[in-house]
Image (cartoon, rainbow, N blue to C red; front, side):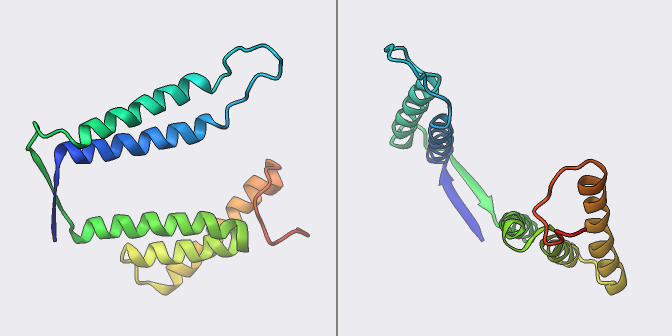
Length: 152
């Protein structure tokens, strides 16, 4: 499957995503806690994000650039997108079902996606690796993980 996108539209959408993400993260910067009318730390990033978003709208409707970018959706690209979706679900699942179970499931699915078919190797790695990470981080370095094993 091929996808043709005009170069200026692709660039403008990318700039708009950057502008929105910058604006959202700039809202988390601290504001001044005094009665002075001094601009806070988030003012300049918000202003730059606003102008970047405005410029991306102008680039989107630019008619001078007629060059196209052609995306070819191949099996490898589908695998990368599937892995990124699995990684997102893994991070979400870690807070819900804990580090141990979500890591086990993520590792098994990733190894199957990459083509490993030896069941004992898959189950061995998916069992031993989270256990080693748990021991190193929680027991040796005292760094908490979202875990289901509270009593260990």
